[in-house]
Length: 226
Picture: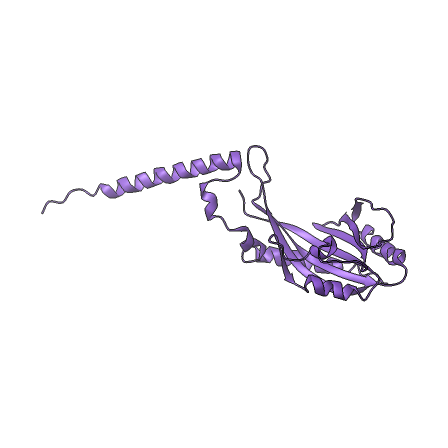
């Protein structure tokens, strides 16, 4: 029996290769100009990375580094009232206007809520001295004021090995869940609280003390090339 040569399969394969190369080329052009292309739908979603399903080892390493560094910062006059671990991610920009060189920049770390009563300035100065002994900063330099209601704003420190610290001093008087010092570790659609109490529980724990400092110790890691 006569059979026709099987030419259809190589033709189909060739067409598919051309189509795939064309799609890839279009994707690269669009990514270069606007930062996103048709193949972007196949990338790992941000929440999957933030929650540790992907790059979980990097997230855990960042938390462990933060925990180790935090252990060196305990002021003698303060007590740890609460602690929470967290992670958060943001999209990088990779277009002709700006090249971050990564798709996702993620931060993970440990937040400790330390409280004390009595003289405010003495323990505040202990915290600052512990930070400036190994870190550069703070930025910005806040005025030496005594808090009257809630927190007074964060001081940022860069501490080497990728560790960064935000120190936020305040008073438990008038402290509410929307205060930046409390909101920092809470789930908000961008940040995932991994362990730790709720905002109301943190406020209740700090209410035992007159003053507090929130030490947000964290490290950045990256996931996926553009």
